[in-house]
Length: 454
Image 1: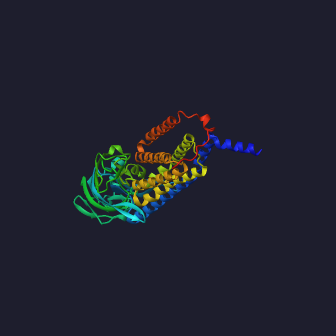
Image 2: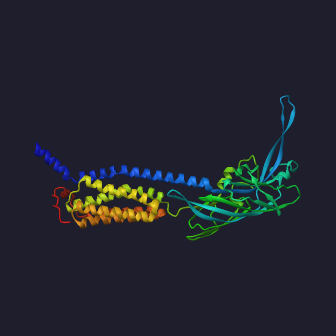
Image 3: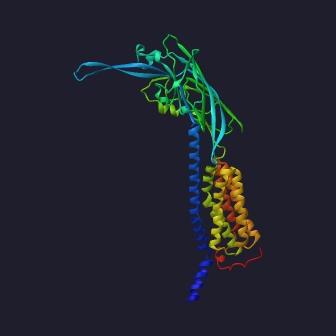
């Protein structure tokens, strides 16, 4: 009876199919620490976002400039029946919004990096000059009587998403008359927070030229709106990694490692709001969707890279285990499941090292150090486990090729699918070529080879 049990146990241990399934099970088991590392990456991302929010709240958030717009108050009158059946005239103050015919914006964003702990945040000082021209508002287009208009209370309004980051007092030159800005956007509710200047339109002037400077602190990005019938924006900065955003990309741009210049030329036909409307008509959503600008992005987001690399962890563990298993089959050595777990643990540590080192050294150097450390560890361990230096070098070389392959995937996001599918095809072809002459029925019956010299 005992002999039968021992024979059954021996046949199970020698069954390559069962060993293959056990190796696959161990690879699945190692997804638990991989999932924990993935959660750690998300936690570090959240801490970085909290640091960015803290720095931005003190320096200045991403700036979105809406305007300028000319706000003209008027009195709206209507009649309604009272409780006694008599017709009563009611009045209510309202506003009409008019946009400029021409709008030119020129400016520069001087960028620098602020730190909060180990996290860095790109911030900037934005200095811009806005100028353009309004035509005299035509209220008949809005179905209103000019007699109801309070021309003397007309004001120029500019929406600024983070108005507290305004660095200097400013004034508008309105037909060569200097008018100071005041807090708030007045009747321009679609502009949010900002500033306004009471310019007045009491005379019969038909054209109104304006110009004014703005100096703002901001972080992460800067955006504008195409409020002119023809809007021209020229922006330059000493930041070398811009990401242009919005419905319009620059018509001209020049980007180097240390600076960029960009120019937008936008006709009003491409946006979804008119040159004039009544303030009670909500245009906020259409205005927000028309914004364009630039974001100051990090050239390599190491948290995003770590998050993407963790997605390949299961595949890399499985391929490394498959290499060791094939050496078992072809060389007749025996590797214990605990030794597989040790190798898998070393592969899992790569992602933890990559994440922790990249916070201090940057992603490329951190990746090189983490991969080199794990390759040396795996190769040194396999010298003892596989009993020969040549076999350990095969495993170490395989792991090194996998990490080189992963780095290429991470650096070429647009071609990741193509590179990934071609790489998997090549790996499967190599495995099929290596095992093309193996007699799988005879493998289990062959006794393991005795350990050789290392």
